[in-house]
Length: 233
Length: 201
Ligand SMILES: Nc1nc2c(ncn2[C@@H]2O[C@H](COP(=O)(O)OP(=O)(O)OP(=O)(O)O)[C@@H](O)[C@H]2O)c(=O)[nH]1
Ligand SMILES: [Mg+2]
Image 1 (cartoon, protein in one colour):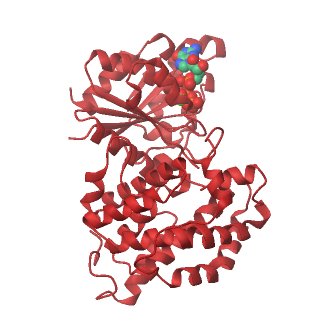
Image 2 (image 1 turned 180 degrees about the vertical axis):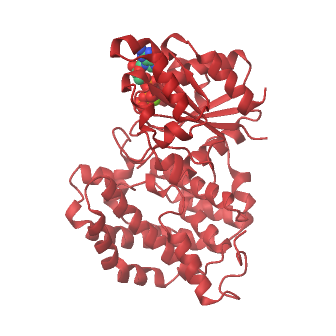
């Protein structure tokens, strides 16, 4: 078990522990399978619909459209709920993903993060394992991320900041691995995006908000078949 | 009980998939319950080839894509493979062995101890008889080093017994076995070693 994990969020933990936990879970070396996903960017770069020289703008649009309206909301539900309610929320998120490929990718990424959380000794909600079947594991990535960060002792604002930061870094490091951006330019982009991330992550959604998404280009890219791709999506 | 997890790594084209194909025949004859995970770089090519081979029901062969990074998915971040293996364990009670084929990589690739209990590194004679001397972590640290395509030695000017001896020397006497996967030679010995050291049966 992680020291202090499992306590109610926001109580008892000194601020420096909260910072350290957030740093820990936002670390790109934290194994979660995220490196294998480009969430449509590979296809769009290949087709010239995203510009390797304006990744910053592209990532900002993804954060505003996809992350803020979908991941942030899905994550908050995963953070708040447990047991049956957690699974019910996961179903709602499942039904809100239109493209079958994207749905399966999100489940795949969620399964990887669950495997990691279990392996480091976090007390993952057994509902996820019980609801998994032959075809797929229960647990969409942002829902699992919310749940894992909650049981690891982060508060919701920190969990949202971790999620937005790792999403932005995931996209930019995919571009680096595709040879379309440099490791240094990536860091400049991420620093420039920091105020936007802080802004978008500042306010948790209302309890009755449902996940939606508006990132039409990447949505379409996620529906394309996988032939000839380096990344899962 | 979960199945033993065995990694199979090695440079591009050394014969990893070929080794799995022939091993499956031996394992089936011994009545051992097996599943396979492949880590192809871009496609599901190796998984498809194993499914077409028909030695295992297709649902026992899973493909995990490696996101442009064959060594990350077996070492720095093996969680996609761990999740796939967990799924196989859940789906096939009684499963005894999961073989995980790494995407072709270089001599520095190694499997995370979080992912596998035991791992094989497969090189071939056509890569040159100097490969063991280069002492990559794959060559040195693998539980078993397999030198494949022994049949090609005369065609590529390799003194095979000398290559085997050199490999044993750099590995400090740890297991090194020769193979011709294409003709099913040496495979019985590899499977016997796995049964002894990993499956205990
Ligand atoms: N002559 C000879 N050829 C072999 C032998 N084993 C494999 N091959 C050939 O070597 C080539 C590569 O074999 P694969 O099994 O695809 O190699 P791999 O290591 O799985 O390749 P990647 O997954 O692409 O890294 C194929 O054309 C095989 O037929 C062998 O023992 N002798
Ligand atoms: Mg292969």
